[in-house]
Image (cartoon, rainbow, N blue to C red; front, side, top):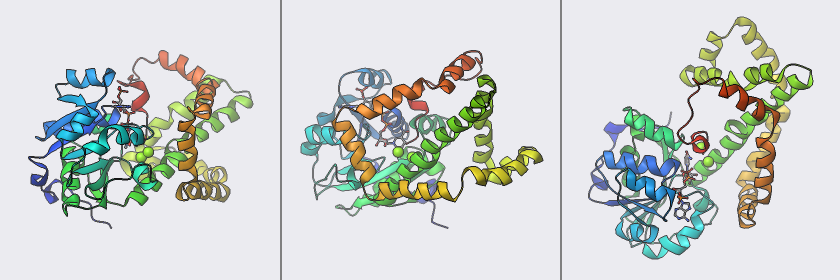
Length: 340
Ligand code: NDP
Ligand code: MG
Ligand code: MG
């Protein structure tokens, strides 16, 4: 098994006395800034004026424009949306980096696909929590943490690995486990996971199941409970104890159906298509499409998003959830469900 590092394996001294600029205060940004501050590190938040700026000030943080925060810091963590990062980097970060600084990311996309090319005299590494930002924050306040990957792309100072580990410890991830990867592996597996399984795969499976039942004449409300609502309960069992634990809790009838019908739905054909998805990620085809989509103001993204939000499962779901007040509304409904 690969070496997983925990709090006891990591020294944080290398990050003490350094100023950390957290650029962005969204899902990941608010979690990193608050966790690092509460872990005793010196944090400044870099933003433009607006909603996030006001929130970070309200949370008691030192907030400055991106250029100023970068200039003041030794370690600059870029937690802006991936598609905004190249522009903000060129306009406000690049000129304010000094030799020996660290340029840090939570996802390898822009470095791996050459959208940001860092100067040779800075360290470049990533610390990528494997969970949504709101959980990075919530678990930290509960004394736990979200596991993280780290990777060093460029080690100018010779200290990049130690600083990355200290950073991971500071956000609470070393309570859960920190392991080493590369920018290539993090970027490609992260994109594949969200496309084929976690987001794309899961939503396509849910919709196909719902549509199959409704088209066969069953009530949409029953189909919603069966194909979407109950999935959370099953996923909780998977999360706690793997496939065996989930199968232990379900009926033997369900388990038999799992064995004989699951592989009929997700089969060798599905796997062949997963391999095509992975290939598009590895060759940069997916990245190129997404970069172009953003450069043209997201015509397809917006059209698909509108259609998806009007799908029957969403209309029925909104009505049913309104009648289940015990279902907790996420603090920020959009970001709480984002998997990156
Ligand atoms: P969000 O979309 O939640 O955060 C956006 C933040 O960036 C907001 O504070 C926003 O401020 C600010 N911002 C946007 N544009 C600008 C700008 N031009 N100048 C200054 N500030 C700006 O991002 P995420 O936290 O989702 O993602 C950040 C990084 O973390 C990405 O690299 C992502 O891949 C990675 N990641 C995300 C995960 C997640 O849970 N979401 C999980 C693991 C990695 P304003 O209010 O002014 O718009
Ligand atoms: Mg991810
Ligand atoms: Mg992602």
